[in-house]
Length: 286
Image (cartoon, rainbow, N blue to C red; front, top):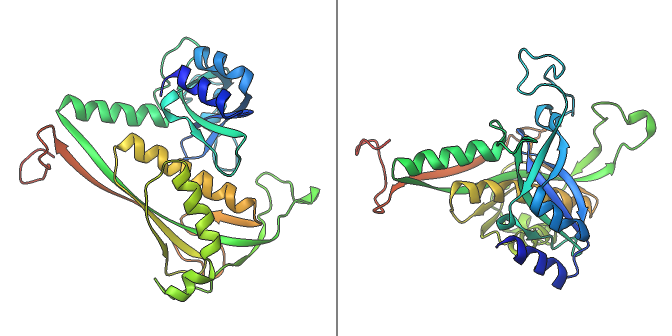
């Protein structure tokens, strides 16, 4: 998809807002929401966001001394530019007036920001291609879905970091791949599966995992950049769909809750030559 294709799609589908995002070092999508009338300019010139978005921890504190030259990846708190990639354009099925597009992070001068997640992965793919190799990855995502009892929105709870919401389980757990457990949460998981498929994700299975409130989605294999974008899109989609129904989707390694199970995100990977032969330690190609 090219820039004009994106503009035509937005006009034809009467899209009102476009979420221009990038993947931060923690795998969180950050960016700005622009209106349809601003999209042409954004595709041509990019949009500016504060560079400190690249330097924050998950509590949103800036963890590098941005006003000091030594030890800081970037100096000061100047803007960087998000350059939207038309090929990443996706409609949001749970917000039909909105769309999502990923951007490459550049300096004001137009140079790629070397430690931006997308740039790192692009360099790795180029390095493989220089060796006449390519990689294929398959994604398995484990996560938990809780029912929110108290969203913790009282002013006194608006600390940094904020007070976590109070939740309860959606399943009791310890019934791995049990049909009746799946049936209990089918409606909830169907919403997520359908949303993922409508965004072009090739979902292969939806599974009840071992722990309380724990589930797994698996996807068809693809190129590293394709799978990486799908991973962050899926995580965002699951969180946003759940939030609309009074639920909380958590992808942290292990929630700080009694009896919560640990989780993993699994990337099954293979490396191929241009002739279609798989690389192995025996062939000496890896």
